[in-house]
Image (cartoon, rainbow, N blue to C red; front, side):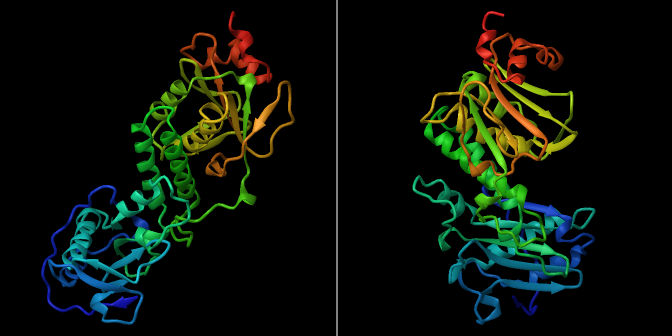
Length: 380
């Protein structure tokens, strides 16, 4: 990484990112950073209102080469090109780079804790690419590259545009919003939902400080999740199940506890979601959303198969009991749930109880536990 030698100081003006570009502040990028040092660095970055061609990863002039890094005292500002395949050059206004750095300083460093953080520019290229009907996951060419401006402590961190889990998390949120706005039961909703699952899975598998890029492809050999579609669980309506998926789950980063004897139920008309565990387990709503979306895509709203309820759990499938079940593997839900957790989606034939204790005593739930046909509860 080239280091720019400070020259003249001109205060930089923050530029707020336009969605899908975003920023985060996190102590991983440093804390207790002196804002005065950072403001000085941003002011010493090159200026210019017209685009400049920056070469990428070459031995050219430091002030027109990326990555770029400047450090003064407790603060370092780094400008990086992110993406699976880097372009040979990038055209951008120097004032844009200065404004990105100034924005992170204003939002993160100048707070009471002096945190580091980063902001992106050009994420729309990635979003536009992954929403092309012909897109094949893993084929992120140079046209899907983008920039990050990182403000951190003196230690050089992994480039966040490649290795921070906030990138796939943002892409998952973007795809989820598009899925919500798409036509119910349409192929676009299924495609967008699957795409959201992939990025959510990658976000949960990544850790700051590890060199795992957001475009990595999970290995099939690591797929420990089982998805079973079972006609005995009835035919819950897609519209009811999506009400649970989009309106009843908690904030994705929040946690929920499930343990023995305390099954959690979420219900909407004909669709019921049950979470149970053999030992006390804490998991995030993001994990639940990822597994639920995969289960709905595979069993409830599959475009080629009739609607069926289904189960999702960590481990190998159980022996067939009763009527034939179909197991449909789906790597978008790879390891979404931890061991000891079971998720079941089934058709609710009786009126939905208002209390989980009463739901656990219904005919329908007894049939689910016994792996019997829930349709026999129609006239109960």
